[in-house]
Length: 327
Image (cartoon, one colour):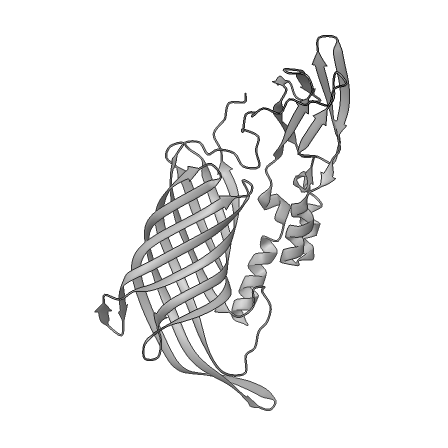
């Protein structure tokens, strides 16, 4: 119950989905049937030429766009709409406060991603490859600093149990971290958090009955990483502590008694491998593999293998982003 209350309070604080996932601006693709038509965006003094990706600031207001090519000219509006992150993301977290917070943020809005606008009347649109700056995620730059919050899901443990090594599978946890780019390609990061093997993948009260075992882990790592398109890869060192308990819940009316019969505290040291895919700058999906080769428990050091493996949902806040050139 203590874990549930802690987890519940943290999720309430971070229950606003679109604020965490979305950037202030969104990249919109503009295509037309005339090459190199000038694109004029209301409220933007930059110049674009089709086919183009334009950066539009999120708002509940529609955005007026004008296309020009010699004597040809047309005007159209980008219709503002509520984003999928607003509806689906907050639905996943099942917290009404998330909707309330998002209702005060323009980041809940988005615009149609691909827009094919005829200028000469033809239906043959120019769709050659265009600059990728305004994509759902932006390429990192030297000096970029991010704060990460992640929710581990689908967690797998392998560690010493009552008499021998065994496995455990479950859900939930919470990790936080910092990431800094020392160059355009290389980053350094550190993460700390806890992982559990709770049987259900959403934060809700769960009271087992009878005998059951439980794994709980604390993990810290230091990594160096690099990016390949929308993929990010990290490698480094990690240390963790896994607590294994064998318990039994018995009923003595009108209360339930939870008794711990056996407990093992095992500390481990090893490597850390992780990768995540950038769905947006603010939301990534990742996989963490933490194999350990040195363990100590009960005052004895052992060369034994154990691991913590988990999928995670990563919410990223870019605190510092260096100025990037707009093409």
